[in-house]
Length: 412
Image (cartoon, rainbow, N blue to C red; front, top):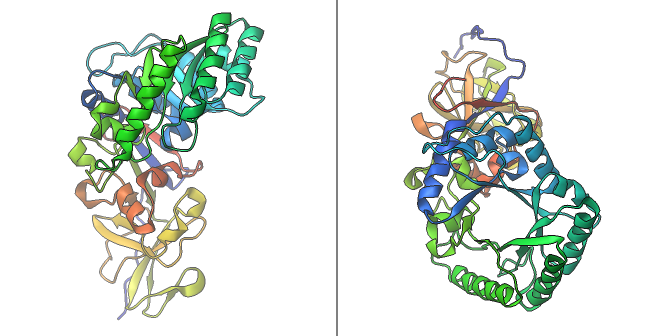
């Protein structure tokens, strides 16, 4: 069988042949869904890790426009970047989706730092800090004395995650240290918080046990003379599946980006969420290949018929999991294919089949998006490599341009 040559299709000029298109309107709408799910609580949009790979500042602004009143990041450097970016772009409050004004200077919580971190910079930038142990309170108080600023602190209790936070039996010691610093005037304990381990399993009794431990910790804080104004426990799954975890503030992360925290329980669509990111690339090679052509490193795949091959310029250097070799779903011209052979650092191969004579160099391959029109989703990619949608979007490499589409626009 002789296959015809395929011509190059003219297209617009793109410096990079791949991009992640981020729908900021979806971000705004998703925050609205989360507000409705926790109507008596404020919403902290978690924008750590470059907003789960979606782009820190544009996403933060879109989340505030959707009604989030707090922002959260893990690392201190992220918090400083976020505050500087928001302050630099402040030109008056934008209108939130429900007509209210987005906060011009929202509180930002950062919860990871090591001894010796530049906490004075955090206080000067008006960053809230988390403390899990007396040493952290001591360093925060020292920074407050050095800068002349009172530090806003959230005490973290380990209610069953085994990660950050003081163990319940050690929480009184943390409360005492914080109360002493507050009496000194260096610290204002504005919050007590924790994190749920199994909230994505709605029937798992661990969540109920964590609520009990958290409630006991709140009572410990009150007996120690503290009156925290925001008590927060729920992330995305808690917000959506466990109303008893809402307290004063919820901290959704993955759901802000339109992805379900528990796809086996409820899909994004079932939860009213819209995935915000579409990862796409232009085919850089399309060519005919005979049956028996080995593909990619190790020749782990071989064409079974005369066919056409397409090369997508994305690889593990861009965050495409190498474990998706032979598995990762991709659509081109409305037809679904999968990665043929091993994922390379910068590219993957598609076996387009013998009939794909209408596919040309420059055509768009979609690796994942919102699932409309049959495109794969981050959940699809997570399923084939045995991971979670969080990892699929967050691991996307920095060299892939993010194109942010404002609300009300679908072109990019």
